[in-house]
Image (tube, rainbow, N blue to C red; front, top):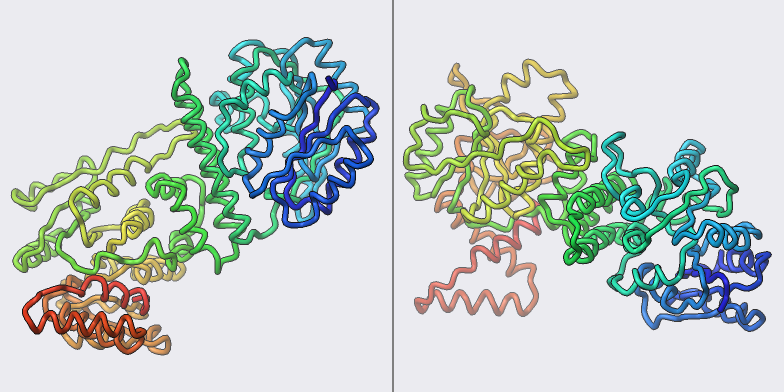
Length: 592
């Protein structure tokens, strides 16, 4: 039995593995094994490993027939290890030549399940010296012994003394040496899903749960050399493929929930804290490290793995950016395009009780007279009794607590509430009425995420134009332009407000066809005065006419046959509607 097994998860590491494996071959402790798990590399990594193995029988090779991710590779490495103790190593890192020998002696002497040692950080450009120093301090071991549940809690329990997402020591797997038996017991419960970011946290969470003793060598030597910025960390821009691996970090949190489900202790706060870590890394890198042209696609990726109410709440907590800049980063994503093209059920959000609601009430009466079903939503504590909404359902936003734990999300319950209202009441359009509050942009995103039109009552336009400075007012105009339509009400003077530079998507009255003929040249100067944005029967008829005309003209043979058949069915009396599908396609094509 070797004294120490060193495990390397390798994927396309041809440029680095000769050096990393070479430092292991030079270890002063010769009684080791080097377990290399090739995760179906597409370069010549496997050839290099086999070449090195041919001259050093301490190298053991495990090869995956398909790419399975770091967690699966690390689990395979543990299950194939035969050493008394075990260490992990990344393919682009190194150990000092004396590391295995001295760490083996240390863990034997301390008689513990885990020894945590120091790691020297080397900055790979464009990583800054400040980031390098922070990372090195961040990975410092706890100073001394831990026993029982403290091994887990001192790493993963919430840190209320500092309100930080890390505690007394961190979860990096490669700055520790372990008893192999403890790792094997933990890896029996490791789920084999594709994860290459956050794998350290999940793997060490399992190991720390089973470990009974720990020693931190906080003042000792540097045994490990970590390259910061060569992988997913650092400042460099990310492509969509690499960003996808970051999003899969959310899967680690799902796996943690499954792991703790049948355990006798309560780990709910541990999972909440790690979800906060995961969402913080995902959304901040989405905004700062994806190229702007890829942010919309990146947003669609995030929505595949993260519930939209949690995702939008994380924007509010982790992204301190201009509201207009935030919505512009995702506005072209497929996820926020309008899919409810037939309007029947309306939700009117009344932001505050102080503003004049006579216009809102007139609109609600008008909409209901045309057969639309209307519900109202307002803030908890608002008194809407003066509106006499006895036959209009009124729902109240959840009250936002004044204090939250540092890893909780202040607007999560609000986002969850809006999402549920939209689903349960089958809402087709959401009208925001009254003064905008600080949650405006997040309300807009969660509504648009449901494929529902987000429409704004611009009754505050004149006041804002008068009181805002030019930059603030410009942001306000950008926000209006990102909505799906606006209601323009009359001022006290009787003159209608003029939204210069704002293009609206919906109107009642006038030339409907003009709305479908906007060009880039005239959008900036286009100005429209509106009384209402909800589609009447004539508008729907025009939409259908234009949609069918365009779909027939631009579609292939199958599309033309489909439209002809539907027309024939109507002629013989079969009222098969194709308004929703075709108009929805048209909306996407025109990006109205």
